[in-house]
Image (tube, rainbow over the protein chains, first blue to last red):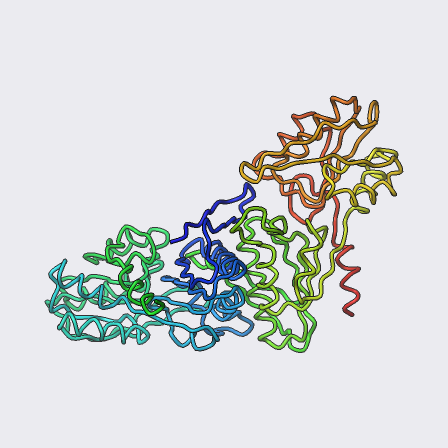
Length: 270
Length: 270
C-alpha cells in the first residue's frame, strides 16, 4: 500500500502526492465518485495521471460508485451524454481498467476502450437481508424495468419470487410516476431493489403503491445510498419499514461492506 | 450565440445542454475555471465533448482563468503535475484551441497538442491605473522573478521604471517570505503586478517591505483576483492603498473588463 497525501489549497484546488514509489507497479486507485462528484473525479484523474507519469505500469481505477452514469443517453436534443465524457477523462488520465459496482446502465461501459468490470453487490444485499434481517421468502421488486435483473438475482437468494413496476420520470421536472399495476403482494413482505437511491422519489411512490395493495412490510435495498436532501426521512415517512445500502457511498444505511467484492476482483491482477 | 441550459441535479451532478444547433460550426465556449474549479472544469469538458458529438467542426475553449496552473512541476517527489492532467482532459474532450489569459507559467502550454494562446491583460491593467487612477509615473514591481515580464510590460505604459523582489514559498506550509532587498522607492508610488492574488500573502509581505523602505503609496494589480478567505481585508490592513484586477474572476476588485481582449482574439476564428 502506498499512502496518498491529499489536501486542498486555500482556493479549493486539490493536491495529491504518492508517498511512496509506484514505479513498475500495477496500481489500484480506489476512489468512489459520490458528492462532491467533480472533485472526486478530478482527484482520480490527477492520481491516475501522476501514477503513470511516475512509472506505474498499469492503473486500475476502482470506482464503486460511478458518477454521471445516469446521463447515459441524449434524452433531449443538445444534451451532453455525460458518462461518455467522464469515461474519456479517465482513459486519457491513464486508467487501463475500470472496476465499478452496479453501474446504472452497463451499456455505457461498452463505449470506452478501457477494460471494464461491472461487479454486482445484489447478492451481498440479499444475503444480508436474509441472514441479518430474517427476510428470507420476501418478494423482490424492481421499481422499473432497468432494475429487473437485480430483483431477479436477489430472488434467487431470498426465494420469494420477483416482479417489477413501470416507472416514468419527467425529463423536465425530474418528477417520478409509478404506473398503477396490480401485484400479488397482499400480506407479504416486499423488498424494493434499485441500483441507487437519490432523492427517494421512486421508493416513496413504490412504497405507497405496495402498501395500498396490502403489502405487510416494505423495505428498500440499494447498492448506492446517495440519499440526498432528506431522502431517508421522506422514505421512512412514506411507510417504508427500512432502507439498506452498501458502503460504496458513506451514509446512515451503509451496512453492507463491498471491500471483499473489490478485493476478490483485484486478485485477478496478481 | 447558442444559449446553454445549465442546472445541477439534486445530488450535485452538472447538467448541460446546447439550446440550439452547433453542427458544422466553430464553437467558442467561454468558461473561466475559478472556484469551484473542479465543477467548472467538468462542465467545460461536458460542453466541449457534447459540442463535438453534436457535429461542431472546431471547439475553442476560452478559459480566462486557468485552474491548476500553479501546480506546473513536481516540487516534491510523488506529486501530480496537475496542469498537465487538466490540459489532457480538455484535449480529450474535443478542445482544439485553448485561449487563456496570463497563465501562471506559459511553459505549461507547450506540453499539449492543442493550439494555445496566452493573452495578457497587463496593458489593460496598466492603462486603467494610468488613466482612471492617475498613477502615471508609478514604479512597477514584480513580487518575484516569475512576474518580472509583467512588471516590465506595465512600466512601458506607466513610465516609472520597474523592479523585482525575490520570493520564497514553503512547499510544506505554503508560507511566503520576501527577501529584504533595497529598492529605490522612497517617496514614490509603487504598483505590485502579479498574475493572481490568492490568499494575498505575497502582496502583504511586499507591501510591508515597500512601506518600510519609504514608498508613499502601494497598489496591487493582478489579472486574476482569486482573493480567497479574507485576502482583500488582509491586504488593505497591511497598508496597501488599493487592489485592482480583471473580471476573469468575479470579485469586488474586478474593475478591468477582458471581453474586448477575448473578442479580438476570437476574431481570428472568423
